Length: 79
Image (cartoon, rainbow, N blue to C red; front, side):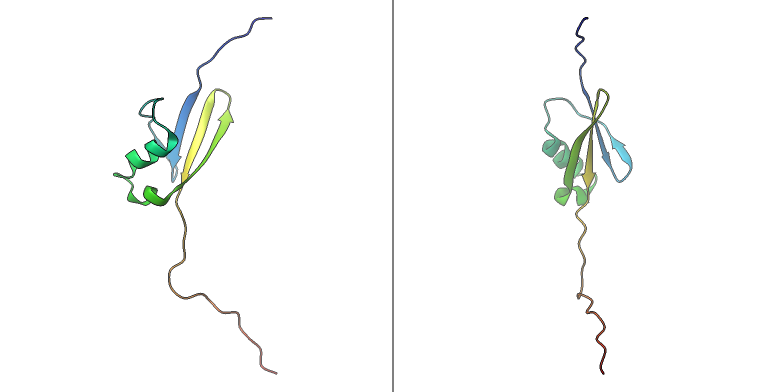
């Protein structure tokens, strides 16, 4: 039985869009910062992953969701 060595490929996505990996020397955080010039909302995005699919490491940039405005109060019933 022989052991084979395969190079892992990194894949980055944001909002369903595939983003090219600029190189293996960049960390996922550096890649997020690099693409934040094109997608400003990435500056506060979280990084999900890696999720392994065979020889592919999948990273997903997830936009930080926040609610603006007032917080909805539950309806109160008066008896």
